[in-house]
Image 1 (cartoon, one colour):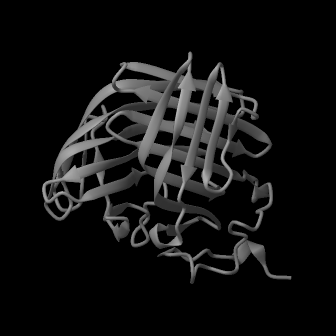
Image 2: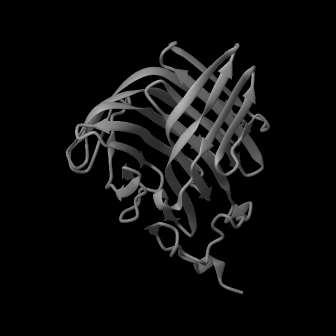
Length: 285
């Protein structure tokens, strides 16, 4: 048998076709524990358009499950959302988001495509973390109170797995923009997870094609995110999801405001219109 105590994970970023084959990466199932660290895995989907901003996720920390969803109706200026410590209302099979909770129904079809996927493996001591980000067309409906809202835009599909440190803090932003030359671009950038050079997960999708980005810096109050080339997006919050969970041995506190962005993306792409989220999260897990 291999000496697990001397195993060292090699960092990786790519489309997944040549990722490390000595780790139990999805769709394989990793053990519940690795060197006394609980396995954490989740799928998060964020949908960004001029009319609605949507999120839905299922999270597993060892044997503990959590799920949440949120819909920011920008026209009605109403935020609908709920977090549950028991799974069963949010379903995220490949290519779909299905939510039925508190009278709300969300049905979103995702055109998942390998061509937009970026995978990153990050060494964490003798353990590892893995993520796959996809930027995909999305279309569907949100129903509540006799009203039906049509959704048509782009979604970020964010899959994660691995053995994150017991105390993990991160700052993250994802969104979609129309830039000055008329193209549609999207981004996902983070500090605190999967950001070990040179295999950083930060990505800009231009017309659906992923481009790697370097490290970023977030304002402590989430007012802006600055890129490695000095360009900056300024955030204008419209609504916010926030939650504190205290299960003694597992705790988390996060803020995830929805809103708009102004500024310039890497490569000099000047934003004309942009929608998305910022996030600050502290987890003891």
